[in-house]
Image (cartoon, rainbow, N blue to C red; front, side, top):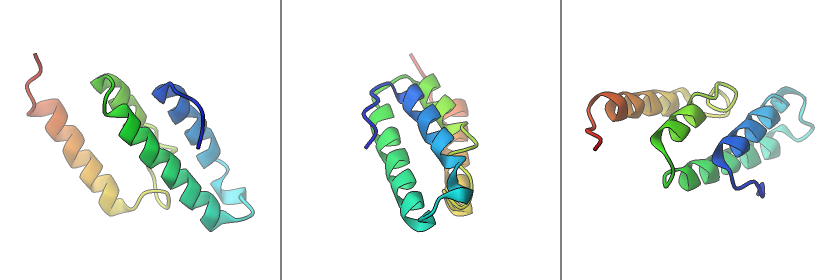
Length: 90
C-alpha cells in the first residue's frame, strides 16, 4: 500500500493513478489495487477532520465508474447530504 500518511496527499496520489486506468496493462488487477487503496484511505481518514474527508470524497478521479459503482456513488451522496445537513457539530 502507499506509504503516504497524509490522507489528502494520498487521495491526490490515488487520483493521479486513477487517471492511468484506461492505459493500465493489467486493468482488472490495477482496478482492484486502486479500490483497495481507496478503501484504506477512507478507513484511515475517519479519524481526521470532516473537511478532509469531504475533500477526498470530492475527488472525481477516484469516485467514478468503473472504480466505484453508481449504486455506491448514490450511497456516498446520500451520506454526504446527511452529514452536512442533518448532523449537529459542537
